[in-house]
Image 1 (cartoon, helix red, strand yellow):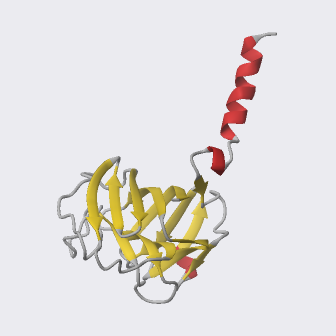
Image 2 (cartoon, rainbow, N blue to C red):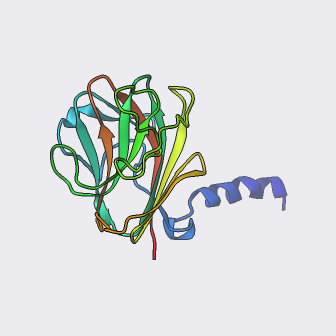
Length: 195
């Protein structure tokens, strides 16, 4: 049999690997709809466009409602416009206003807040600008196991922290749209439950 005929089939089968076979990672955004997600306020801020969650407008948080995070990982590719402020929440409580939960900050050039991308907001802050340009994709990856929290930016660990109080033991994942001057985009949103 011609080996070149088998290759496309093998590639196709590799693309269809289930989450359990892909190291347990679950894709939590289908690239087309916001199914499974719920905005706390201003749902019109959030749009699914060409494989991306695109957010702009007044303060709002978009929660992934299908599963809570106790011990989990959460990662996404992110693109911030110039002057944008955002965040990736985990173990957060659904509701209006600023969520009760941990926030991994997303801020490259928002000058009103010194806490930069990679910060465990208000707990273990990063003041160095890790992403030198605006409007470029980068990856933020959160690992929360018990009271041990790790945040990585583009594969580099920037926070490795043990919260002795274990302030937020469980809750939802959420994305932040901070203010009308901010625009943020997310793609490749993934979650993994840790055993």
